[in-house]
Amino acid sequence: MSSSPRFTPPGAESQIGTFTGYVFACADPAATHRELTAAGVVFTEDPAEQPWGRWAQFQDPDGNPFGLTQREDSATSS
Image 1 (cartoon, helix red, strand yellow):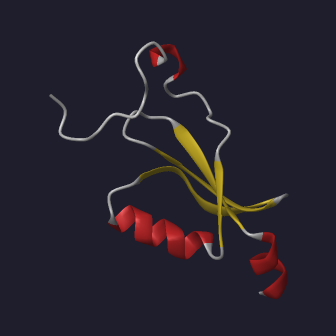
Image 2: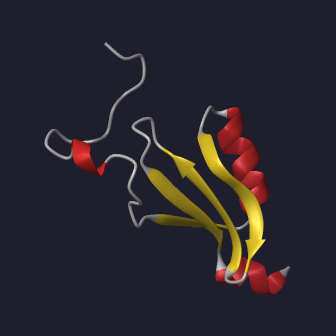
């Protein structure tokens, strides 16, 4: 048995590793990256400036990717 929980429901195994479409917004992607990395979250893309704003990507224990971006209200106030 795995020591970490699995989140993919039975029958959806073929979707593991495909983009989920879920994007989390935060005030500071670099600070959130540091906090989540310290908690053991695996990032597949470190925070970087992209044409659409600041972006990072991480995965859950099953390998499903999720986006992390900067909230618009935070981007305009910095």
